[in-house]
Image (tube, rainbow, N blue to C red; front, side, top):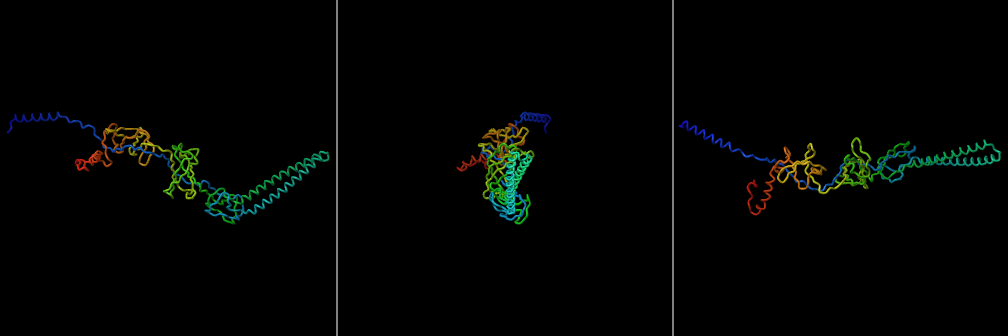
Amino acid sequence: MLGLSSWRWIAASALVVVALACSEAPEPLGDIARPVVVREVEIVTLDEQIEATGELLAKESATLASEVPGRITELQVDEGDEVEEGSLLLSIDPQKRELELADARARLTEAVANLEEGQRELVRRQQLFDRNIASSQALDKAKTAVSLARSRKQAAEARVGVAARAVEDSQVRAPFSGLIASREVSRGEYVQVGQALFDLVALDPIEVEFSVAERDSARVRIGMEVAVRVSPYPDEVFRGKVSVISPRIDRRTRTLRVKARISNGDGRLRPGLFARADLGVATRERAVVVPQEAVLLRAEGQIVYTVDPDNRVHRVVVEAGLHVGVRIEIVSGLSEGDSVVIRGHAALSDGMLVSRRNPDGSDERSEMNVASDAPNMAAGGAAPSKALR
């Protein structure tokens, strides 16, 4: 059995051990490397484009209406027919118009004869007045008769012109080359002035109308090439050129109206089709692009985290440009050879140490070790057990 002195010695020894243990303070652990996925920036050639949606329109489209009343005596075309400019489409009782023209010409002949007779009478009255045989009243009456006869002649000439125009209007002709989209009347039908007869459309060339955003309005110019796609021909691209640019921005939509003209000799493109238009604006060589998940929106603007060779991150404010699929062009802030964080941004701060990881969470260095040991294994060597695990 231990005595009191022995217990005192044991207690003193324990205190010494505890004191020695407490005197050995633990060493600091140092920086904790946060795992992140890193990608190097890409250098590519970008074709800058403006994309818009719109509609195909007939360059020329008109509803032809009757300009004279009468019965349709001749009908030359039907729906779907192709017509040339100036070709006859239908006749509205032209024989009646010819008779009216003949009557107007006869009345003109009569008016001319009356004027000539009045002029001879005026000459005779003037001669009698000069010899003091006729009175001034008779001379004035002859002058008035000549003025009236001249007015009647002018009126008769106008009636001849109206009758001649009616003869022309009774023959309805195509104002331009195109297709008969619809026919509203039939042979034998009586039509009134202003009644619709045909819808005529021109399909070659055809136009596409679309709108571009206000920010892109300064980059659109006459003659710019446009690539157009439509649903009936999803695998084809139809090329055209900008032909019309509206002089003003739409105040409601803040867009600019644009038209482009497309060759349509085979008539496959039809008015009313929904169209997607791409305008090739410019080509930029050696543009810097990064995955879109690398760009973050913060109070100071758009930022990325770059990773230096020492695996330290740096917060960089950048200016983004075009969106190219799942990538974003970086106009300023990055250069060739830079690496950016694309995953693991949470709690990152400037200067923080990071550990590069693969998207599946594995360490990038493990893959590098496997790749570097492959030649040795092929030569008969054994790879380290850590790399094989």
